Amino acid sequence: MDRTGKEEDRRLIEGLLNNNMAAFNEVIARTVRMAVACYRRFRVELKSLGLEPGDVAQEVLFRLVNSDYGIFRRWDYRESVDAAIYKITRNLCLDLTKKARKERRMLRSYAELRSDVQMGEFQVERKEAREYFERCLRSLSEVDRTIIQMRRAGRSFDEIAKALGASYSMVTTRFHRAKKRLRDMLRESGIGYYDLI
Image (tube, rainbow, N blue to C red; front, side, top):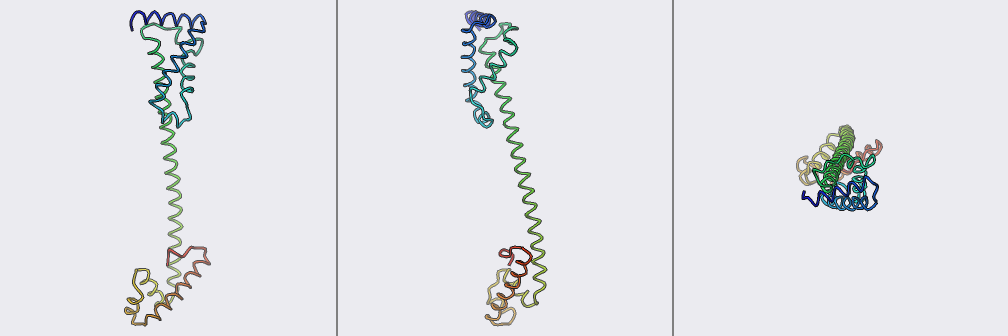
């Protein structure tokens, strides 16, 4: 720092310690400039916390003048006032950025945990529905069960008719009647049937 800068800082600090409003206004102006500059750099994280540049400047001013101009009472003039303001502003923004990232990680892990729990519940319900469907399927006659299983496997009615040695109309009729019986059994138990049959 050059000699004129040191003298200017000395007058500014002495003015602050003597309750000079012009000196206080100068510190406010410098703090706001630094806060706006740092805010631009950390904008995403600070906005996620609902903070604006004015909030950052206010917190920096509080830290600067806490307990009757705390930092200025023990000033040793080795660094400029601007450097001190910048250091406090940067450290505050870094602290707030860490806080925002931690909150985002917590929210993300909570959402993943919640999703896993919901998926687990869905899988349990799905497994129970499948087991009940298999019990209902076993309650059908062997021919009806075979027709349903072959149809679920993607076979056409013609292929099923040839495999069973039956007519096309008999296979379609038995399929639709068996499907209706399954649907009624599943509906009585409160289980959806559309994706099971």
